[in-house]
Image (cartoon, rainbow, N blue to C red; front, side, top):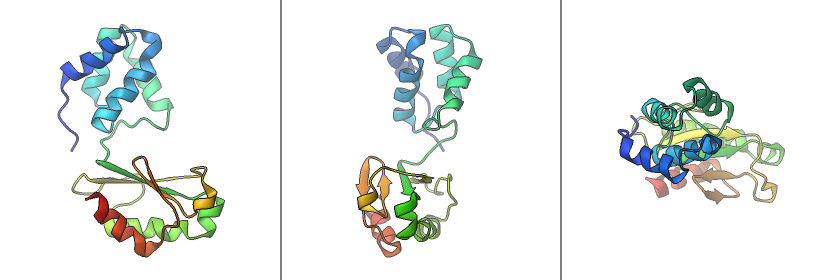
Length: 154
């Protein structure tokens, strides 16, 4: 489901960081921004060019929740389930996304367009209930609004 890995692009990322082991997190962030996850081929290439053990690369890639080793959709839909969002209908919004996309939380839609995630807080309680699609915040979301939101990003 993920894009094919272009090792020349991965090499470019490594070069931007001068293959410096202390920049491993930055390299992983840039690779993930490109592919929406961390492909195994890219991790092996980073290990090879930077000269750190592969176990170290995977240790960093699996330690931080923001990294993913499985392909994600073109758009990441994150539903806040913090206290304010929960009380204002967050769980119903998650259910609406599940129904519309045909996925469970942490899964990607069949067409590869959307990945559904939840978080404990997005830090914008005044906008509750809040949904974040990629970098865009959508406050005051309703279960009915989910369908329109998905259409906007298709």
